[in-house]
Length: 316
Ligand code: SF4
Image (cartoon, rainbow, N blue to C red; front, side, top):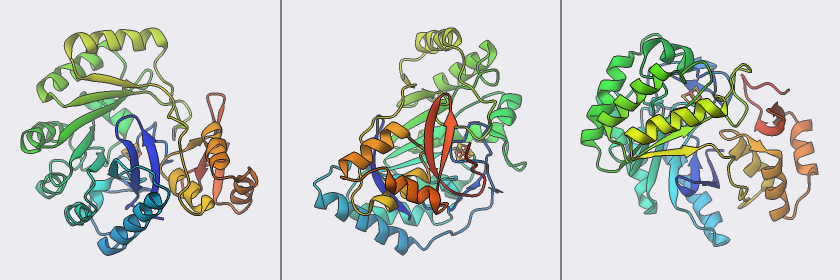
């Protein structure tokens, strides 16, 4: 199931999500990752799926959405791993243009110091790059990078990419208590973002189950202080602290749509119930997916979330 959705997001409206990396191949093993622990920590790029297969699956998803007159604002590369690990990234984005929809890529930026990665991302219309930490120690603690990666090289090349890219460049920073929320960390982040001048810099907090149970958002007073410091210095700060909207829909077979979305995006019980109700289905669909070991339930901060089963994801 490579194409899924359309899923709602505040940044991109309704997206057809493209999961073109199998679980869970990533260059990072972030402590807050919502799709489980990294089972394949790697930096070498390779082909995962044939581009033609991805293009066909996206085409089918678009046709399903069109058949129910559902709007699509973006095609978004948002796999349960790092999208730039796909060596066919440039070809894939170029070929997706056949659908005449804007293309977004959500990347952790770790391979941005490779020219072929930058060249591929240049084909996109909207690129989000992760900037969780500017200090080496914080970066190692929060993103737990592959040992071949270098933070100075990544930061230098994010700035270089900014000058080459003509689409909308945004950054995303996940704030984790006692990891990257100190005064010093926030001051360094502000200085870097001031130099970068992205279209937007989004701040997030863990709102879905993280891969490490000790991960928590900063307390409200620390968050307020961070917001004050950053908003004073930067006009393009925006926050993504709220839970996602409820409007998840099914365009075809409901069980497949649930598995497609939850492979990259854990669904709150409330959102899942709403999705079933809109499709005229009941909770027995979820019970069957759990009984056949395809879906798991995870508890986080007094809420229940549902995720597709994969190595590195445990129920609780
Ligand atoms: S949050 Fe993103 S970059 Fe970090 S481990 Fe998960 S998939 Fe990789």
